[in-house]
Image (cartoon, rainbow, N blue to C red; front, side, top):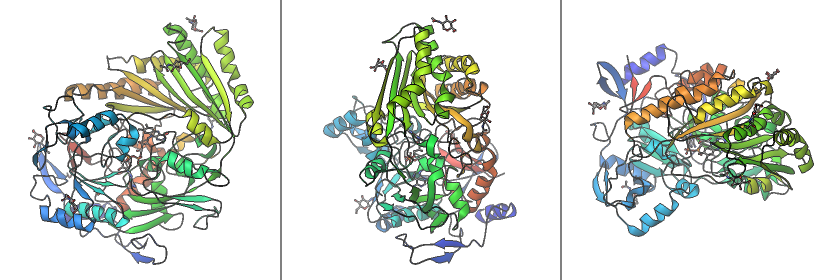
Length: 616
Ligand SMILES: Cc1cc2nc3c(=O)[nH]c(=O)nc-3n(C[C@H](O)[C@H](O)[C@H](O)COP(=O)(O)OP(=O)(O)OC[C@H]3O[C@@H](n4cnc5c(N)ncnc54)[C@H](O)[C@@H]3O)c2cc1C
Ligand SMILES: *[C@@H]1O[C@H](CO)[C@@H](O)[C@H](O)[C@H]1NC(C)=O
Ligand SMILES: *[C@@H]1O[C@H](CO)[C@@H](O)[C@H](O)[C@H]1NC(C)=O
Ligand SMILES: *[C@@H]1O[C@H](CO)[C@@H](O)[C@H](O)[C@H]1NC(C)=O
Ligand SMILES: *[C@@H]1O[C@H](CO)[C@@H](O)[C@H](O)[C@H]1NC(C)=O
Ligand SMILES: *[C@@H]1O[C@H](CO)[C@@H](O)[C@H](O)[C@H]1NC(C)=O
C-alpha cells in the first residue's frame, strides 16, 4: 500500500527522487558538509481503514497491531539518553487515578495538586510542563485540576509519550521513530498554540523547549546580501528572553518578536509569520530571517537560506507551522534599540455604563486606526463588552510629545462627544523599557476557541467606521446565542516599511491596518454537540461578521479559525501553490501535521481523534 501511495505521489510530481541537499553533522557544525538525498524508503505505511466504505490511511495508534512493542520504545529511550517519558495530563496529581493507555495508575498527591492548582493559570508554569497546552480546549479537557479526587482523569488529546529533547540528536531520533513506525508526531515548544497544533491524540511529542543557545553576530557573513548584525536563536528561546538578552548588549539590540513575553521565536511563531510591536517598522519576524538549521522529515540535518535549500527557506518563513522541517535554530537580523513612547487608553465601566456612549468611544478609537499605522505605530488592544483597553500604543523612535500629537485628534473627538476615558502617555529610553512596563503577561488554562480576521486600509477608512462597529457588535452578540466572546486587536502594517514581502506570508498583509482575534470561551464539560455549535457560531456568525465588512480576504494562520473555507487562500493568498509544492517535496508522507497547513487537504481527524488521509 505504501508503494502505491508513493507511486500516486510520484505520478503527481510530488516526490523528488534526486534532491541535492546540503546536510550537516549532528551538532550543526558547518565544517562537515555532505550531499544527500531525501529518502522515504524506511517509512512505515499508513494503516488502511475503511470508514463508510471510503478508504483511509491512518497513523498507527495504541492498540493497533502496528503500534511499536514496548521494547522498541525502550530502544528509542536509550537513543534519546533516557529523555522519553510516558505522558500524563498536568492535572493528574489532583485525581485518585489516571486511566491512560497503559492502564490505570494511582496519581493523587495533595502537595503536587496544590502546586498545579495554584499554577494552572500561569503561562510560564504551563510552558515549563513537558506537553501542556495553554489553551486547554484542544486537549479535550479530560483531566483538569479538581477539588474532587474521584473525578475522572484520562489522556484526551494529549500525546502518549514525550521526548524532552536536550540534544539535536534526540529530535532526530524522534522524527525517525515516528516516520519508521507511522506514529503521529507532535512538536511542542511553548504550547501557546491557539488551535491545538502542539497537542495530538495518540502522538509522540518532541519537546524543543530546552534549546536556549543564543549567538550574537556583529556582521552576518552568510548567504544573501545582508551583512549587518544578526542573532542565531535556538528552538526554545522565547520573546522576552531574547529581548532581555539583546537589551544587555552594548549597544542594546532588538529583534522582531511577538507582543507576548512567553511565545517562542523559532517554532510556530516564525512559521506563521510572527507579528509584534516592531512589525509596522520592520515587517513580520519572518521577513527578518537570514537562515534556519533544521531536521527534515526524512531525518537529515540541513541548512536553509537564500542559497541552500532556498525553497525550504522561503516556506519556513511564514508558510505554516509543523509543515516542512523541525527548526533547530533561526538566524535573524537585529536592530539597535531606540527611544520609544507608549500610551494607554481605557474606556470601561469605570467611565461609563451607557453602552451607546461606550460604542461611540470605541468608534472614535477605530476611526483613527489608519492614521496610527500610517504614522508608524503599533497598537495592541482588547475589547470586551463595555471595556476597551488599549495597552499600549507603541511609537518607536518617537518622543512622548510626538505620540501625544498623533493621538490628539482622537482625544479631541472623545472630548467633543463628552465620552469619558483615561489616557496616559510616557516616554522610555528604549523600546525594551516600554515593553516591560506596558505589555502584560497572559493567562493559561482557559478553554476557548478562536478565530480572527484582518481589516485593511480600505476596510478601515474612517467613513466606514459605523460599518466596522456594527460588525464588532455582532462579535459580542452574534446572530445565534453564544457563550462569552471578546476580541484582541492589533493595529500594524507590515507593508509600511517592507512593502514587498520578504517571506511566505500572504501578500495582502502589506496593506493591513487591524488584525483582530476573536474568541469564544467554551465552558469545560459541554458536550460535543454544543462544541460543534459554538464552532459554527465562530465560523459563520462571528468571523463572518468581520469578513462581511472587509475586502482583505486575509487572516493569520496562527490566530484564526482553522475550519473556515478557503483557508489556503486566506492564510497565504497567491503564495499557496508554491507552499503546497514545497510541502510535497520536503514532507510528502505527512510525517508532520498541523491542521489547515499546506498539503494537508487529504487529512482529517476521524472521530476527532485519529489522523487519517483519504486514499480514494
Ligand atoms: C498569549 C498569546 C499571545 C500571542 N501573541 C502573539 C503575537 O504577538 N504575535 C504573533 O505572531 N503570534 C502571537 N501568538 C500566537 C503564536 O504565534 C502561536 O501561538 C504560535 O503557534 C506559538 O508558537 P510556539 O512555538 O511558541 O508554540 P507551540 O504551541 O509549542 O507550537 C506551535 C506550532 O509550532 C510547531 N512547532 C513548535 N516548535 C517547532 C519547531 N522547532 N520546528 C517546527 N515546528 C515547531 C508546533 O508543532 C505547533 O504546530 C500568541 C499566542 C498566545 C497564546
Ligand atoms: C526512559 O529512561 C529513563 C532513564 O532510565 C527512565 O527514567 C524512564 O522511565 C524511561 N522512559 C520510559 C518511557 O520507559
Ligand atoms: C453616539 O453617536 C451617534 C452618532 O454620532 C449619535 O447619534 C448618538 O447620539 C451618540 N450616542 C450617545 C449616547 O452619545
Ligand atoms: C478601567 O479603566 C481603569 C482606568 O481608568 C483601569 O484602571 C481599569 O483596570 C479598567 N478596567 C478594566 C476591566 O479594564
Ligand atoms: C492601501 O489601501 C489604500 C486605501 O484603500 C490605497 O489607497 C493604497 O493604494 C493601498 N496601498 C497598497 C500598497 O496597496
Ligand atoms: C469512530 O467511532 C466509531 C464509534 O465508536 C467506531 O465504530 C469507528 O471505528 C471509529 N472510527 C475510527 C476511524 O476509528
